[in-house]
Amino acid sequence: MSEEASPVSAPPSAPVSAPPVAAISVENLSHRYGNFPVLSGVSFDVQPGEIFGFIGPNGAGKTTTIRIMATLLEPTAGRVLIDGIDVALEPERVRRIVGYMPDHAGVYERITIREYLEFFADAYDLRDGKVVDAALELTELSKLDDRLVASLSKGMKQRLQIARILLHDPKVLVLDEPASDLDPRARIEVRDLLLELSELGKTIFLSSHILTELSDVCTSVGILERGRLVIAGPIAEIAERLERERAGEAAPGAEPAAAGGSSSYLTPGGAVVPPQARRRLKLRVLGPAESVVPLLQGGGGVLDVQTAPGGLLTVLYAGDDRFVADVVRYLVQQGVGVVGVEPERNELERIFLEVTRGELG
Image (cartoon, rainbow, N blue to C red; front, side):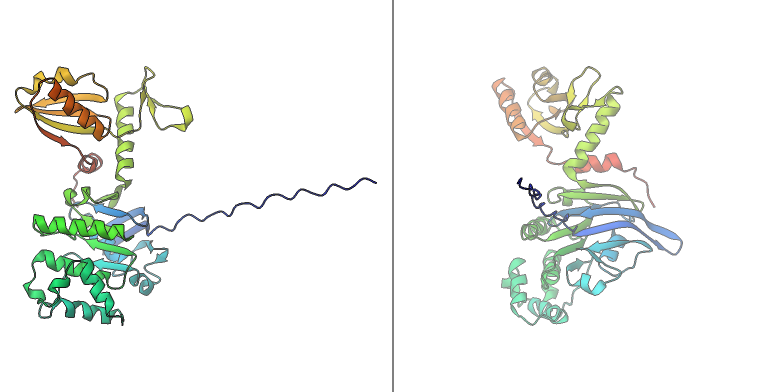
C-alpha cells in the first residue's frame, strides 16, 4: 500500500514591516487669507530624527505653514500629520508631542528663569519638578535660574524659549526663525544646542531665510517660493539630482547608463558620469593664479579650474576631503605658496539660487 505523500507546508512568510511613520507629513497643503493664496499644494515629509530646514524669502509662506503645524491655523485645503496625527482633527494630541517656538516670541520679564519655566510646567500639568531642572540643564541655564528674565540677553531669552518647549518632552520641535536678531556667538550657541537635541532623537523643523544658519545643521531642506514648494529632500540627493540634470543639458546626447539600474549618465562618447554632486575648492596662492592652472588641469577628479585676481583659484572637482588634501600637498611639492584653502562644505546656497527665480509676492 503506497503512502500518500503529505503536502509540503510552505514556510511561514516573514512579517512585512510597515514603513515608518513620518514625523511630519504635509499633504497638498493650501491656505489663503481672503482671496489671497498664501500656500498652494505644498507636499513634503520629514523623517524622525531629521533636522529639516524650511527655506524661502520673507512672504513665501513659511510662517503660515508652521502655524498650521502648531494647530494655530486650519488649512484651507490639504492636511498636516504630526507623527500620524491630523493637526486639524486632533489638535490637543498634537500639542502634546510638538514644541513650538514662534518668531519674536515674547517672554514674561518680571519673574526669574525658574519661575518662568515652573509657570509653563504647571500649564502643561507637569507635577514632577524635575522637568524644570532637566530643561535648565539641557539649555545650560541652571546657574542662572534665579536671574530675572528682563536681565537676559536676546540669545539667553532664545535659550529660555527652547527650554520652555522642551518641558513636556516633545517628539517634534517646530522653530520659526530661531536665530533671528542674534549676535554671532548666540547663533553658534543655538546651532550647537539644536545639534545636541537632534542627537537626543528630536525631530527638528526650523524655518529661515538665512542659508548660513541652516547649512551646518540641516540634513534635509524644503525650498518655498511664492507659496509653492520648489524642491524638498536630503541636501546631497538634491545636489546630485541637479547635477545629473546639468549633465544631461550639457551633453544633449547623454543617456542614463543601464548597468545595474544605475542613475549614472553616459556621454555621447560612452564615458560614465557618476551620480556625485560636484564640489568647489577655493584656493589662494602667492603669485599669479594663472601659473597654477597647468599643474591642476587634467588631474584625477579635476573637472575645471577658474582664476580670479589676487591669486585666487576655484577648482571644480569630484571627490572627498582626501582630494583636497592631495591637491594642497601636490601644489606645495611643486613649490606653490598656498596661503588659503576653503573647501565647499555644502551645496545649499547653490541649490537655492538654482531652483528659485527670485520672484516676490
